[in-house]
Structures are given as C-alpha cells and as structure tokens.
Image (cartoon, rainbow, N blue to C red; front, side):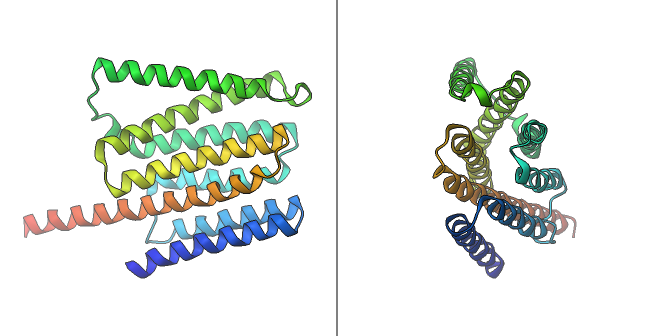
Length: 237
C-alpha cells in the first residue's frame, strides 16, 4: 500500500507546482482549464479500486462539475449555479460521516458553545458579504451566498465534531479536507470579489490539498472496512 500513498503525495505536489507555474506564466483562462484538468485527474484516482467509496461519488462528481463551471465564473447564471453546487458538496461531505455523527453524545454546555460558534460565523459571513462592491452584489446571489455559507459552517462544525470524537487518521484527513476546501472557497472569493489577485494562488493550493486529503480519507476508510471484514471472517471461520 505504501507505494500508492507516495503516488498520491507525488501527484499532489506535482499538480500544485504545475498549477502555480501556469498561474504565474499564463492567462486566467488557461489557469482555470488546468484546475479542471487537475480535478479530473483526482476524479480518475477516486474511481480506481484503491479509493472508491460509493458515498463519495456524489462529492467528487460535483467537485468536477464545479471546477468545470468555474471556467465561466463571470457569468451571473453560472456564478449562481456554482454557489448551489458548492453548497451541495458540503452537505454531501456531511453525509459521508452523518451516521457516526448521530452517535455523538453532547451535553448542554457543548450545544451552547456550538450555537455561539455558528452564530459568530454567520455574523462574519454577513461582514464578508457586505465587503463586496455594490456593482458585484445581487440580491439573489446574496441569498445563495448565505445558504452556501451556512452549509460550509455546518460542514466544518460536523468535521470538527467527527475529528474530536474519533481522533484517528481518517477523521483528521476528513477535517483537513473540509477546512482546506473551505479556505479555498474563501480565498477565491477574496481574490475575485475584493481584487486581491495573489489569493488566487492560495486558493489553488488549498483546493488541491483539500481534494488530496479527501482521497486519503477514502483510502483509510477502505482499509478500515477491509480490516473489519477480515476480522469478521476470522470470527466465523
């Protein structure tokens, strides 16, 4: 299994270098196509027997679709569709661990802390949306942005809870994937809407890392399922 692990690491680092090189030396259109090609490579890795997990198919399909839409991000209709797709991606990520999250036992104090944290993040989301120049803000897009932001906040909260509860390698990689994808979206928003173009490169690195972490999570989940099945077979033999 180790060679495959190194293959994912090498693939990830190679894609980061290629993407940054293209972003520095070529135009934005080429950069977006390279981003889509990178996601396609990750998608092909995911559907291989080593990483495939049925619950993750929706996530990776939507990630590929989202990066395809990103090529025409300036189109208002495409922009709105991207918010919807990204929101569904985060909800689909929650679905990957939802069964185990239902087993969590939380006390009143923890529930209060989580409620306060979500409230603070919603307020920060409002402040971020308020920073968008008037000419780039549309009421319908604003609504989608808040719904999308809420999906991100709930997903991050779920990932943190999952990691704290199980504290194993799989849960850590899942948390890393969710946080990286969230930071990727945040930095892209800052770069595109607030005019800080250097954040596009930060977005690209976080995006590639997030998908790589998600693949590693799938790999570890498969190993766990194989080990569990092996133990069950041993008990019945």
